[in-house]
Structures are given as C-alpha cells and as structure tokens.
Amino acid sequence: MGEHDSASPYAPHRPAETSAMLETVGVEREADLFDIPESVAFDGTLDIESRSERAVTREFESLLDHNDDLVELLGRGHYDHYVPSLVDHLADRQEFLTSYTQYQPEIAQGFLQALFEYQSMLVELTGLPVANCSLYDAATALGEVATLATRVRETSGSHVLVPEQIQAGKRGVLENYADGAELTVESYPMDDGAVDTDALDAAAGEATVLVYAESPTVRGVVEESLSEVAEIADSNDALFCLGSDPVALAVLEEPATVGADVVVGDAASLGMGAAGGMGLGLFATRDEYLRQVPGRLVGAGEDETGRRAYTLTLQTREQHIRRERATSNICTNQAWVALRAAIHAASLGPDGLVDLASDCVSRTSEVADRLDAVPGIEAPVHDRYHFREFVAKSDRPAEAVAGDLTDHGFAVHAIDEHLLQVCVTETNAGAVDEFVDTLEVVA
Image 1: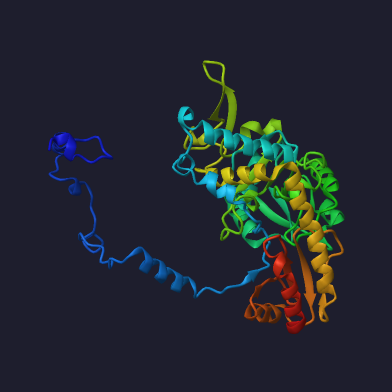
Image 2: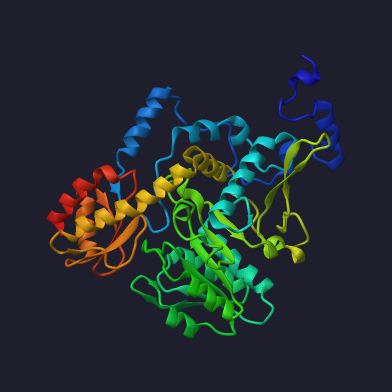
C-alpha cells in the first residue's frame, strides 16, 4: 500500500507532507498541536454497549413514552399546520441538506433559485419590493428593524413603541438589541385586544423612531387600525413595522397598502409545523432601505451564456464587510427552513394558501362560539375578528382549568388569572369535540 492509499480520504495530506508540516512548526505529532486536559481527553473507547438497531429503537421508544401525550391547542407565535410529505421528500435531498451557505453559485443554483422564490412569495404577500432570504426568527427580525430605524431616521430619537400585549420572549430579544443601540422600548395601551390609537398617538413624539404593531396580535386578534397606526408613525417621522406571518398575510390587508415600511414575523408556520419553537424570521421592506436589510439577498442575473442565474448578493453582514460598515451581525440564516417554507407555499398554490388562511378565520370563530356555550366560559373575550386563536375567560382560575385539561390530555395557555388562550388549526381540529366536552367537565 502506497502513501496515497493510506492517507485519509477526507484530507489531501500524505504522510510525508504531514511530517514536513509538523517539522516546520516544531512538533512530533498532530496531538501536540492541541492542549486537551487529561480529564476530558478521548482514551480510545466510547464505553457504549454495542446493540442492534432494533434494540436501540426500543430503548428510544421506551424513553419517549415518558413524554406527555397531549393534544396541543397552543399558539402565541408558534403554529402547527399540516406539512405535506412533499416538503420532506424534496427538502431532504442531499443537495439541499448538505448545502451550508450558497457561496458558490455555480454549484448551488437549485438552492439559490428556491430561496429566490421564497423571497418572491414574501414580496407578493406583503406588497413590499424587497425581502431577504430569512433571519433566525420573528424576535431577531424585530430587533433588526429597531437598529435599521436608527440608521435611516433623519432626526434624533431613541424610543421604540410596542403593544403592551406582546410575546414576552420577543420583547426580551428586542430589548437586548435596544440596549446595544441605546434605544428605549416602551409600551402603548391596547383596547379590546387591538391598538388604542388615541393612546398611541399621545405616546408617539419626536423621540419615536419605530412603531410596531401586529396583525394578528399575540392574542389572535385581527388588527383593524393599521392605516391609522401608519399615519401616527409617519406624522412623527418614525418607521412603521408590522408583525404577521405568511399564512395570515394570504387574507389580511396587504401591509404595503396600509403603509407598513417593514414587515417581520415568523414564516415557519409554513414548512415546519410546531417544530419545538423552530423559527424562520421573515423580513420585507421598501426599496429605499434595500442596502440596510440585514442578512443577505438572493439576486437573479445572467451567466456568460445569457442563461438566467442566481447568486447571493448585498451581503451586508460583518463577516463579509468591514464591521463599521455592516448593518447586522446576523451570521447565518435559516436557509433550509426557508426552502421548506417555499416548497410548502408552492405546493399549496395561491388558492390553497387562501383556503388555509380562510379556514383559520372561520374555524376559530366556530370553536369560540362553542366554548361560549360552556357554563363558566366566555369566548372570545375580545369582540373582534380572530385568526387561529382567541382568548376565553374562565370563572375558575385559569391555571386550575389548564391543569385539569392537561390531566385529560389537552394543552392550552393560561395567560392571566382567569384567561385561557386556545389555538385551533387543521392539525388539532379533529379533537375539538372531545376538547369541548372535556372543558364542560372541568370549567
């Protein structure tokens, strides 16, 4: 066996080359290049009993059987929609799974085209002409908008206004961003689950750089005053950012039409299901902020033969350009998750996406009416249109009701002393009858 044959198939160095490099740096072995404490150094054995595939499968099944088997009626930012098997079959192809970042367009045209289609879908849904090819999640996308606002606003200011009813984790991430950018996050009041426009108008002023609103809100309420919110932001020379998601955007008002400067949210409602909180941050904005978009964009052009070609462009991250010129330190994106979202959206088609979104309105209304007929329950609490989820008031303490429901196999949010939040999608709709019957017992 020659030197080349005995070399690692994954490294190009033959023994003679390795020896020459070690001699140059003055060590005898590769191990001498590392300072690994003896207590954690690999001793040559993993101390894992060898077992058959079937035995390992049985052990994991036994372990997973300890998990609670609950019907989840949970929402508040993470939504479980049925993901067609087509998504798994296509997204699990090796050319997608093994592609980290598509720096080499000549070998990543398929993935780049899929991300370009993802961006194009967001452009259609939001009406805004620029969409990036994904961020971590909705919370980081909102944080990036706050720092963008400080860069593009022509006058001084440091206040970011958000609704008082906002997911706690999202606000926490925003405050982390705000601290580094010397911004202050302040809340404005809500009126029956939606924006109190009079209170927002009074809170906004010269110091306001960003106004953030959501539709649907964290409580599932469809916001009816987006145009007024946009006018308040504009009159104070502040940016207006709208939080939503691609399923809701299929039937709600187009953000560009109501005056949104930026749209953020979580696009993982397509392609991922309720993946343990896995996120996919969407970010769309106006042309004038093109060079301020965090992360990166996929652009379309032509190769030297005149064929349509795709490539990463406008990469404004600090790992690509000088730190003082970077717009963001976002150092990766959810490319594979964005791919799944694009495949899911394409498989539904425009009509299918609208049908799915319409069901999220009608089904939610029907379930709220059924819960309202349960003694001890008032639903929905907010006299508004709802999308996917709603808040119900319980005469009994909400934690007690939620605990009893868990004992009977159902999970809901207890969000206040007497408030429960229920989310219904096509994945748990088949359990609604049993859920209503159970609630009649425990309420």
